[in-house]
Length: 257
Image (tube, rainbow, N blue to C red; front, top):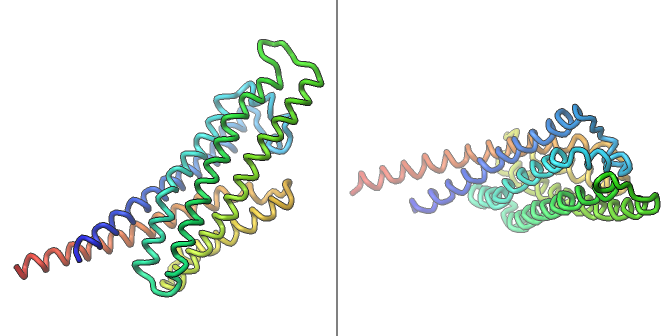
């Protein structure tokens, strides 16, 4: 009886710390892209125009790679969070606990797919960029540039579509988990925020898939960063309550002996 609450408390604490770190890194990614990279001449329009992006990437390869490494790190820290939220909804809830496991699977799949998409972009973008501008100042012909541009568009589109589909799954996971949390704790701001962020993520991802020029995705990283920090805070609070309960049970058991 004592060991189970302790183990759950540790899992919730791990998920809480990971979610807060993921949110912090996500926020840092936004600052990196809109602040640091912009100071080096990068514009958000470059994401939609490979002819503008590839020369910039060739001149700032390490800077551009750093963006995707930060993004990847934020996703890596998200890996334990679906399991922690599953444990939270199962341990504290009743209604909706039957869909907690599918939601956790969807969440883990979303994070894993996002990491795969980021790996595709991270590994191919520098190679394509240098091939586009030509190595050692040996500029390729116009035909070569068009071929490289087509190849770059292919890699970029594969990475982007994987990432967008992961965002669809992410929205489903956050929305479903948020709905369970709202039913369990109707007055919790974090629960309602998780539900709202899940719905917003799902809508933005679908709109981006239907219209690649839709600008709403530019706001999604900041929204998710705040949501992850909120979820992490909620997990840490519940972990603290379980740890306190476990300590109380341990003291009671010692007193009886």
